[in-house]
Length: 282
Image (tube, rainbow, N blue to C red):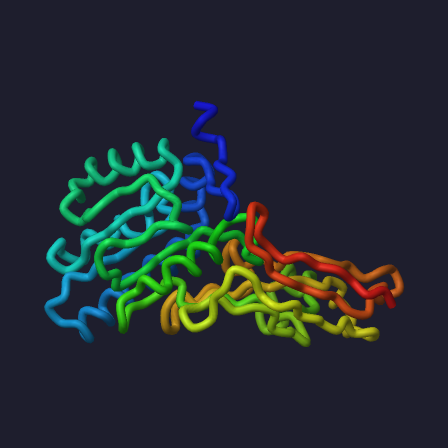
């Protein structure tokens, strides 16, 4: 159906249509790491809050809530309860059918068709999980959702992912083709932005990053990098997922040099969230 392929454009960014949201599952390593991270977070809070039925708020579920559904075979409904938030009504309908078909309704506190950037929880939330992002935090409302939901997490609660880090630097793409993991990292990375329970906002200050005049052979791309700490030691590093592929901003000329001296970055929320960039020419 055409409606299943129509994204919804919000004042805070793009909400994926059911088809595209469902296809995110095909990013297998990303899905695995988020499921493992949420499992570890549940185990951690079960140890620190014994006897507490954990209320997990999952924002931006798509039609399946794939980060939550597998956990229903590991924990009982007396241990975990989910509030599932999704703004696309077609996804919400499919979500209800999916969980019913797996006989997992007993794990659901509520399924709501609502905007997670404005939602207010009526009961304490122990874990917030949301994967509503693309690489470099562009287009989708991960930042706005985090800014709204973090203040609603109960003391001692957990945000999944724990931390999203954006940095800028040089990248040698050829080394990734040669399968040299020790050389895949960018050089001279400069932190640009972190998103976590301790550091979140709707807009961030401008960051100025120097672009080296002389660069090591092969490092011909200047990129934004995304790294995600899902929970504890469970991470997504550069290149592990579609979420952490470098975003190329500049490519060196035939002389191996960049025709820019500095690049300015500022993350801005809104209808088209992401980094606004400008360059100072060499």
